[in-house]
Image 1 (tube, rainbow, N blue to C red):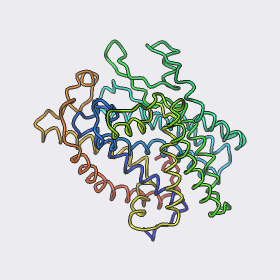
Image 2: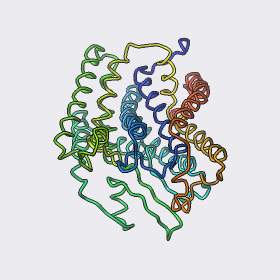
Image 3: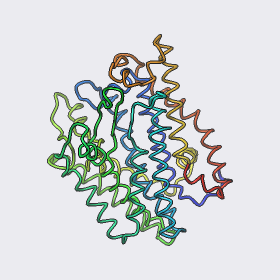
Length: 395
């Protein structure tokens, strides 16, 4: 690792790598744990503390990933003109949307017909990059204010809901309302899990955040800001959550036990990401950046590898995990084709009571990371040795 030269900011890559590794745990759970993706681990009626924690810890992944995508856009643009950066963001945004609806969709379903259309984090990053390609021409202060308004104010739109497949309803699903419905007379399924508006606010803030990593920015001052912003976000999370009036789609409630009351308190809305959810996840992430800036050891070296090839890792890990899930069904004596997730299989819910214990999911997660590390390490070295290949910036 020490022989590899890179101009990238290592602490950012470490954080990105860590959340990518954690993200794999959630996806392994989707394809191995009892109930598979048909069971909601945040449902207080059916979850357990261990299952909820397994889901909760992975909440850090998407917001950190999107936030740092904005930061990376800023850092990438330091040696580019605004016009060049805008073109890159626009074209890469289109590319990511295309990949989401083809390569990524297929990785989730293994259904050649692609009848299940899932709009997840790659789509959200893509569409936000397209918007950001225009927003970067605004003054930084205006961008910062805009990002704050979206992140802090979008929950005021929670009361606006649509239903059906009318054009206005469809538009609103893509902007701010989670939607999962059967379409095309029962022949297709649409899942808009990542309405883009809140994510756009987060990416915009990430872009502004990139200024802390300019070469002429005092590292000591940066660390002070990281600590202040991180602690401030955590404090604000607890204050708003205790007030229990604004910032989340649903309020928390006292439950029959302390454990489940705590679960209710930390059960923030991800689809779309509420203000509470963003504060809960981004605050600790900023403190992690503060703490990790000068740390270098075997753990950080491993995280750097995953953090420098996040898109490649994301695609590969989905296919590997889905294939492992099919092997798992065979071990259970079930038909592996049940994990070819067509519209009919989503409707049937056959896998609801089938699967492995959660500890098995953790074991598989560990194996997946071990399998993927040498592949990602090799690809990282390839990218570092071929910086002249422009197309690698899209991968």
